[in-house]
Image 1 (spheres, rainbow, N blue to C red):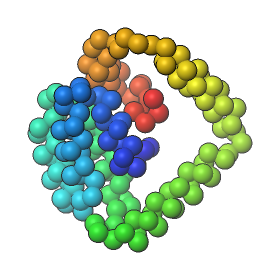
Image 2 (image 1 turned 90 degrees about the vertical axis):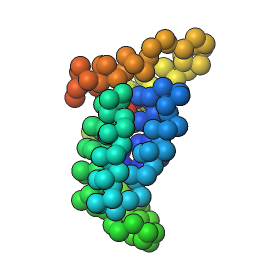
Image 3 (image 1 turned 135 degrees about the horizontal axis):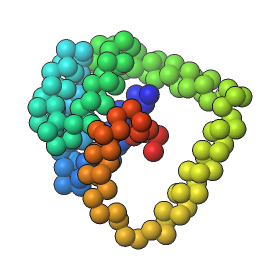
Image 4 (image 1 turned 120 degrees about the vertical axis):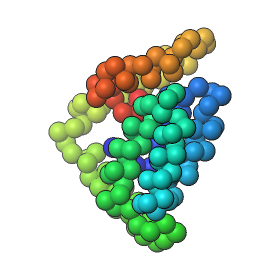
Length: 150
């Protein structure tokens, strides 16, 4: 699960329109640095404002916050934040270094690179893509990959 705030906000913008993207990102950024109780209140305020239009975002951020509370340190403690970030990076590098995952990961990397190269040739954006993505995330809950994996 992605826990880096920058990546979470970027992933959330995949579900929003261009006009709402900045407002949604600004509201999400108030949740991230908050202590536990303030984060819960900020998440409730975010849900009240945006759940009607983007229900997927509220559900994803509630899941992320549930996992982040287990490791959250008091806001404003940069040494602890830095130590926590380095520990996560070491753990993630160990996970990615497992030999069983190498063949599947290489295949996924090749598919990703092929799509990435092909997408450079696409000039017309898909009409209604973000609305469709929100619809599929609701209809096929649990079957779509998390936003950071796309």
